Image (cartoon, rainbow, N blue to C red; front, side, top):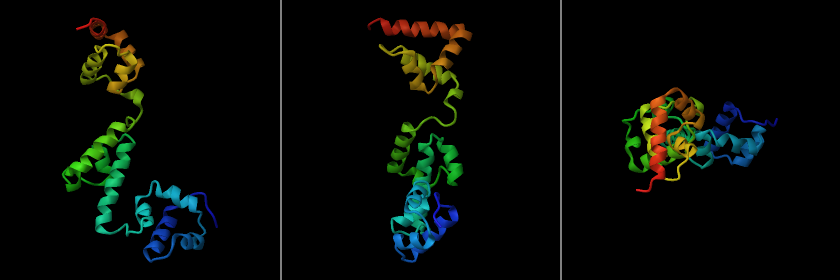
Length: 182
């Protein structure tokens, strides 16, 4: 029986067979799986990826590696670190979160990730307003670029401008500051 997707039960059977020294090709054939389904599942199943690398996914050293991989995967999806900690089941005081190399990896992944949730729901908080105005006051910066720099959409900026006279004045002042050479 071939399947387009690998179920969690099939992945567990495959991991067990690999753990007992069977080759991947033999196991895939015996279980009636498609190799492409195995590779597709390994993209999101850290335990399977570790087993395919020839290691025991339930070993103590691999459990930490798997937690780190899952944590980074959640950060790459734009998840805040605090929520990723809840999902993975680690605390911010755990040793691997204090590792400088891993902290740098977390920062890099977080900065490259898309915002979590619906980006249209990002609010112009006082901190974002200050950063937006600072960005807008730089020469050559557009509203689009300044809004992107703080993680909000231009429609959110213009909506705020229409209903907040002080914000509209501050935007005009920032644009004027960008035009005048210092």
